[in-house]
Amino acid sequence: MTAFGTWLLTTPIWLIAAAIYGGMILSALAGWKLRAKSADDVSPRAKSEEGYVVSSVMGLLALLVGFTFALAIDRYDTRRKLVLEEANAIGTTYLRTQLLEEPHRTRISNLLLSYTENRVDLARSADNETRRNDLKASNLMVEQLWAATVAAFPTIQTRPLSSAYIGSVNEVIDLDSARQQSRRSHVPVEVFMMLVLYQLIAAGVLGYVLAGRRGRTTASLLLILFGGALILVIDIDRPTSGGITEDQRPMEQLLETMKAQPPGTFDVPMVPPVSEDLPPQ
Image (tube, rainbow, N blue to C red):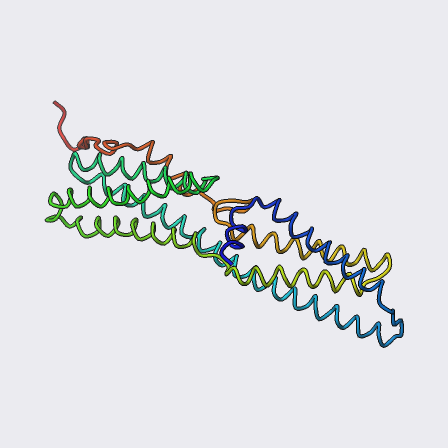
């Protein structure tokens, strides 16, 4: 089971598609050969029974694909929402950090900037080794962020800001754990294994029942459609690889904003307004 799950997550999607379609073709050919060797019963009753079998098999396959698709979409939607929530949490913490005294303001601001860059890189990591290194760096920066917050706390503990600021930092740390868990949450491997096995069986049934040129054309179209649906589900279930990945635009926009507003940007002296009631000098 573990090896099959790793294969689904790490193998290029085109190679998975080739394996699934290749298996279905072989299964359909086996069914066709079995039908050719058996004695054909062409009675209307036999044809009607075969029609019921095909309808039942394809109906159950459609139900399994739809169920698995709903599971994958739910996990994808959770990951997408967490990207926006984390971007908002980091942005709020960055703005509140500008209220701290130096050197804590610059230290924590730079940490948040580096942390955001790492989060974007982590979502784009193409191979497992790079992903593991980015994840280690992310965990280290979380520890450094909390250490810097502890060091800055004595300077704000008597101010009303302290409670809100600590809450912001805690939210950033909590969302880090939530996003890591969301990427580890996949459709159960047993569901995919059952779906692939059933799809191979359905291909064999179609090859056995649907004879003739029109039957083979119909079987081919059904296999292409259901195979494509399965490949789409597998793609959606992969967080950082494949054609359907997490949208990182909230994090990218936040990164651009943070770079455009380095520490000290908001230290603009207030110019007192000129009153029109003052007499001329």
